[in-house]
Structure formats: structure tokens, C-alpha cells
Length: 351
Ligand SMILES: Cc1cc2nc3c(=O)[nH]c(=O)nc-3n(C[C@H](O)[C@H](O)[C@H](O)COP(=O)(O)O)c2cc1C
Image 1 (cartoon, rainbow, N blue to C red):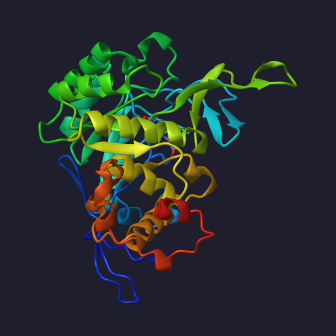
Image 2 (cartoon, rainbow, N blue to C red):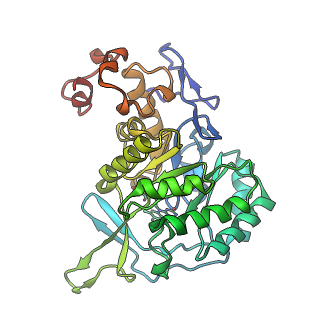
């Protein structure tokens, strides 16, 4: 792995490899590198900063914050599943005022690029949270969590309908500084994710973040009761990656200019590359952090390596590359000599 990312977004390996431009534009959000943390999986980045320099990745997406403090759902609220995990945290958090005073102030002082995730039980609440953030300032973008399936009122999954999703985004847009990019975080638990993406774009979203967790359930066969106190929970981790790649692909195909932050089960640079090729302009890392707190930095280094060995000199060249016309295949140097045919990457390169 090259492991040489510096804050300008340009990197050069110690071996004298050519400079690599890792910067990305996610609409009006300019990032030095394309790897972010996923909301709810890294709090406000403080703990991760003990494992790697959080200013060296693209940015921190904070845990969704609501207007008032919330204790979340009853325990147990985590369960293991094959290739993933189920959570029903229920948006536990200190409320937006405490968040601004403590977490946002720390992130600002630390110099990390910050995307603040917000949530609410009504469009009005989303608007109030956005208005408080506008007064505070000191962040780079807002991610609007319209898709979390864990809030107490199950009727309030805004992301499942185009009109309710759009209404929240319009309200947040109205209550935010017009220069602040806004990303709508979409749920995969819908019939047509493209319809929802188009409606939030129309309502003023800069782009979309895809995907949030899928609604799932585990039964504890000892107690013969649901494993989670909240009965159902959000499924995350490698099990959902193909669903995420499919959603990114479908949105990119239908809406070629809409900025996309991709996420869902990314464990390696190779996984991140898959999302980029499908159309993601940046990639968030979530569940992987729980068993490897340095995962965002490691995955960023691995992604740079994966791009370099395929002959890319800029990250932006790889975005949506899987959508290209088939006869353009020959234009990219796949540097096959660098690859071991027994490596899992080989199939991809040799297709
Ligand atoms: C424990 C946990 C808490 C989460 N909390 C939030 C949250 O507060 N807001 C949000 O938008 N997504 C939340 N998510 C969803 C993640 O941000 C991400 O979209 C999802 O887990 C898929 O990515 P992953 O498989 O890499 O974790 C949470 C996920 C987990 C596992």
C-alpha cells in the first residue's frame, strides 16, 4: 500500500511513483480525499483520532443529531448476523446545542472537514436543527438522515415516499446557508430509489448519500423472542454491499450529474473502488470501524493503490467508470503486471 496521502489531495509514494490526485468534488463539497466516516459509526471522530489523523481522510460525518437530547431505544440494541450486524440504537444523542458546543467545536479546532448529520421526527424539527447549525457555522456540509428506521414512530420514515422526503429537504434548504451543500441520506427499503433521489434533488439537495441500513430482524432461538428490544433493526456491513452498489449504479444511470456519497459494507479499498466505479464521488466507511478503528485510513490507502495499479492518475477518472461504453476499455492501462492472478482483484481486471 502506498500510504502517503497528504492534505492537498495530491500524493506521491516514497518509491517515486507519479503524483496521484485524490481530490474529489461532491457537488460543491470539495474534499482532499474521497473517504469519509459513515454517520453513527464514529461519533464525532474524537475516538478515531487516537488511531489515525482524522484530518488526513476526506472528512467526518457525525452521528445524526436531533433537536433535544435522546436516550435511544431499550437494550439489547445490537445483534450479529451473517456478514453484518443489526442495530436499533434509536438516534441516541445529546441534542443539537450540546453537539455544537462540544463536538462541533472540537472538530473545528481539530481542523477536520465536517459533515453534520441531522435527524428529526417532523420536517419542522429538521428545520429547527438546521437553523441552529446555520447560526453556529463551522462545518462543511449537512447530511439529512431521512431514512433511519430506528426512530420510535415508524410512520416517520420520510425517505420511503418522494413527497415526504422532498418536504424535509426543502425545509432544511430553507433553514440553511445557501452555500452549504446538503446531502439526502436515502433508504434502500423502497421500490424505486431513483424516484426518491430525483425528488430530493428537485427539492434542493446537492446530492444523495446511499445507502442507510436495511430493515431486518433476528430471533434469539434460546429465548425464542426477538433478539433486539426494539424487535427490528438496521442491517449494515458486508451483507448489504451489493444492494448499495446496485442503488449507486441505478441513481448514477438515471441522474448522471447528481453527486453521490456511497456506503454500505465497505471493508477494503477494493470494496470502495467498486462503489466509485458504480458512480460514487466519495465513499463512507461505517460498520468496519467497529472491528478496525483505523479502517477509514487503511481503506483510503488501499483505494489509492487500487486506482494506481489500474493506471488512473486522478480519482475523478474512476468515478462512474463502470458505466463507460465497452469499446473504451482499452483506453485505461490496467497494469496487469502488478497483479497476482491468485489475488481476488484478478477477475475484475481480466474481464
Ligand atoms: C451502530 C450504527 C449506527 C448508525 N447510526 C446512524 C445515524 O445516526 N445516522 C445515519 O444516517 N446513519 C446511521 N447508520 C447507518 C450508517 O451510516 C451506514 O449508512 C450504514 O451502516 C451502511 O454502511 P456500513 O455497512 O459501512 O455501516 C448507523 C449504522 C450503524 C451500524
